[in-house]
Image 1 (cartoon, one colour):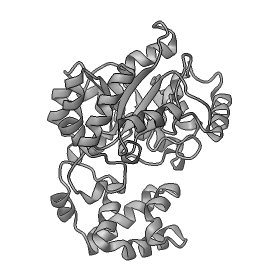
Image 2 (tube, rainbow, N blue to C red):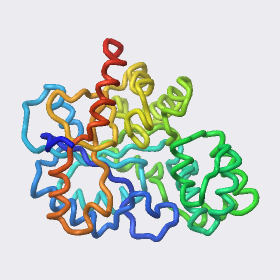
Image 3 (cartoon, helix red, strand yellow):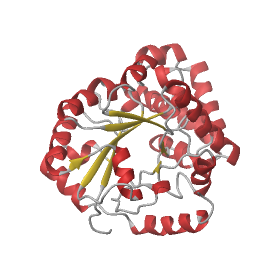
Image 4 (cartoon, rainbow, N blue to C red):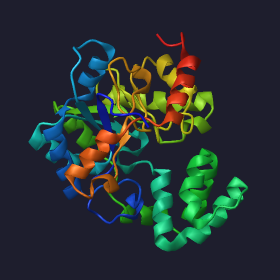
Length: 328
């Protein structure tokens, strides 16, 4: 691991105190811990909006020291209900990346649904379905990992459809797990908030490296269309689902964003950024409850110690070779 880089971009997901099966062990942070962590960050860093951070990277603003930006993935309802009021009280800007098909809980996020069913005690049935679909043994405790690492939208959809036909109806799931994502009225209100910036996070949150070129374009362009219709004409930033370079996405996703005139792409494999960081691959540090539960001081210590793992340095070099001369 390398030492501390100048500027950090943090990644949060849900900040929820409800005991929902969908969120269990998938990065949820209790609001009380989130408030403690954000307060500590405000004292130790100059917290800026992601736009300002990008301008520093690109050289459009003078270089500053110890900048930090806050981002959220997925567009959770808890961003509006629990996280934003804390940040507003401290004057902290943030950027929230939306799974656009899931806004208003219209679409069902496949990972949440499988997690719900597992927590309902249906792991054995899902294991059997997943093993049949993926042609390999999928133990109960490996379901979420395998359906991500070996991701197939078609196979996961068939698993979900089988569950809904035989064990958990869509109606039952929707009534049990409500307000998972922000609604249209939340977005309409918050887009006028000067501390809020929205970005896109694909239509359905697939594993991009497992998609065809056409599917990659469709996932991103569909989110761009939603953004242009409902949020504004300013070009959105793009957050890659899961965000591990050459595990969850490759150069095809980065090149697709260039084809769609998106300039800023954010990953999620850790590490800080220095001025000159390529805008097509900004590093972010995913924040877990484990990182902050021992208190603000330990949380800050962990952030200070975080660098970029050597295997991702090699992945970055590979990416930049692949896209050299192919982005404007």
